[in-house]
Structure formats: C-alpha cells, structure tokens
Length: 414
Ligand SMILES: Cc1ncc(COP(=O)(O)O)c(C=O)c1O
Image 1 (cartoon, helix red, strand yellow):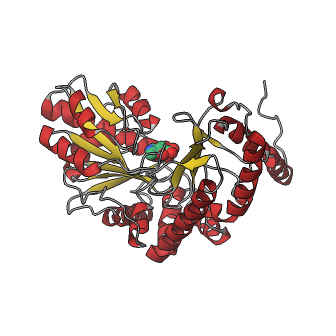
Image 2 (cartoon, protein in one colour):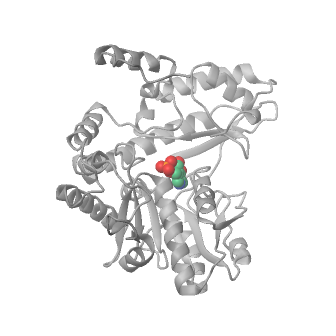
C-alpha cells in the first residue's frame, strides 16, 4: 500500500507528474465529452481560477472572521433569488452542489412535516425521471421515495399518477426543471397546485435549468414557468457550478420563506465545551474560493454573458439535432427543451449500442441512456467546436454499424 513519502518531493517534479497523470483522460477541451464539464473560454477560466485563489485560505464557515465572504455570499444569494422570481422574505443557502441543495431541501421538509404535521414516517412522491440524488439523500434522511412512472410520449411527470400515490405520510412532491434523462420540464405548475391543495412541500429541482432556462427564455424560446413565479413552489435547487459557469462546489438551495430556514434547516447545538455551534449546510468548513469564484463569474458574465451562453448552446443543439435527424436510421427524441437531448435508432437494422461503441472507439466519451436505449448529450458552450467532427464520425459509424449488435446495455449508463 502506498505511504506518505518520508521526504517531501520537489513541486516542479510533482507538477509535471500531475500533468502527466492526465494523459489518458478525456479531452473535454475539444468537446469530446458528452457530460461532466462546463467550459466557455480561457478568459472565464482565468476569472474562476483567480477569484478562487483570492480566497484560497478563507474558510466560509467563519463569517465572523471573514465578513467579506458573508457579503459576497449574500450577493450571490440575492442574484439567484432575483433571477428565480423570489418574493420578499425568501432566502437561499450557498451549498457545495446539487446533491447538497437537494439534501437540505429534503431535510428541511422532513423537519417541517414532523413539527407542523406530526409526520414521523415521511414519504416524497417524485417522477421516475427525478435525479438519483433525491433517492440517495432521502435514504440518508430516513425518507421513503415513491418514484412514479412518467409519460412515454413527452417524458413529463404524470401528475394524476403522482396524486394517486399521495397518502397521510407524504410530505413532499417534486418536479425537475428540466429532468436529466430527457431534458424536459415537468409540469411544475400542475404539481405545485396539487401540492398546495394537499398541504405538501413542493421542491423544484432546477439544478440543470436554474441558471440556463431564464436566459434561454429571454432569447425567445418557449420555457414554462418553473420557479417562485409558480404559486406553491416551496424550495428550488439551482446549480451555479453547472450553467451558472462557476467553479466546482457551488449551488443554491432557495426557500420561499426565511422562517423555514430558521426553524427547520439550520442545525444548532451547544452540548459541548466550546459552546454554541450552528450550521445551515451539511458541510462544516467551506471553501471561500467557491463563493468568490461564483460571485466573480456572475459579475463578469452579467446578463449579457449568460444570454450569449444560452445562444451558443441552443444553436449548437439546433445544428447537432438537425444533423443527427438527417442521418437515416437515427431520431432525436422530442421534446427536448434546453441543453440535454437523447437520440436513438429508429431503424431496426441499427443497434444504438453498436453506434455508441463506434463513437467511443473514435475517441468520444459517450453518455449511454438505458431506457429507451439511446445516446444522451448534455451540451455546454464548449460543444460548439465539436459539431462538424461529431456528425462526420456519426455518419461513418452508422454506415459501419448496420446489423452489428453493441454493448450499450452492458455498460454503466451514467
Ligand atoms: C437534475 C439534477 N439534479 C441534481 C443533480 C446533482 O447535482 P450534483 O452532481 O451537483 O450534486 C444533477 C446532476 O447532474 C442533475 O442533473
């Protein structure tokens, strides 16, 4: 087993070892990865890095020591709240990512339901397209998640089906804006109306859409209302480290009412020798750099920058989906409303798994969809550079793949 070296090694040597360590990793820079990264350009990367480093050693748990971080975090929170139509009295928490935002929403809802409704065996009813993080967080928190099959026509939540699964232990409904498997918005207004009617918490998972959908709507696309503009929405998760273009480790958990945060989100404790301890997040020490980078990116891009990103992504999607649909035997699933889409083989002589294998063999990092079998792409601005190469390779692979069975079902899909 490897041990910490007795003698420290020279940084210049370690640095080149790190660079070397990456040699077999995927080339995200040329847009060859279908998921797992967000990149606009070198300028924005410099802003992220320098802002992060400016707060390298500052611990964001220590607002008493670093009041500047309290201010920067407060400004990031306000920008997020205003973007997502928060009413007066709303609040938000800066978290480490979508998973933590969802965890906090579930934890706050659980404690609210226990205190105000006496529910001790809580359940959440969610569409099956909802991100696995929901079930994972619920597992940690002792909440049962009921996943309800979604429509096979438009991949949206089946609201009537969700209504049927509500019982006395149900505390929460949720919808995605958009969902990850298909890039489609659930009918948030209908789910929120149902939640209101039954006195339930309504969470919107806008980890993907929170910092993209408002800008896509502004540039003229049809995006349904999904945020606090919808009556009955209690909480929203929206990731800064996805389309907010911040450095990794940045998301917001937004709440319609400050009261819910004060009473049910914040953990307080004083039964030890150091006195009172209080945390609004699942983390203790938190990187100040993540807050500084998010703050800098939002101010650097401005609304204009985010609109530019929205235009690049939607134009890239138009070119890619048009090119894929023009290849006989392939079809892009509709609808797809934002940056995510899936395509499948519409010709029985083609196996989409064999096409995925062929693309992988040509150096593409392929997102394999399990149901229906397909190829999944989550676009970011950097994919603009890959469209022609991707389509050329896809045409060649399809020509070779006729009649060949692939390994798509055997591999991990995510
Ligand atoms: C819709 C949705 N929700 C939640 C998450 C989890 O976010 P994170 O990976 O930042 O924890 C993801 C991640 O892709 C997502 O797509």
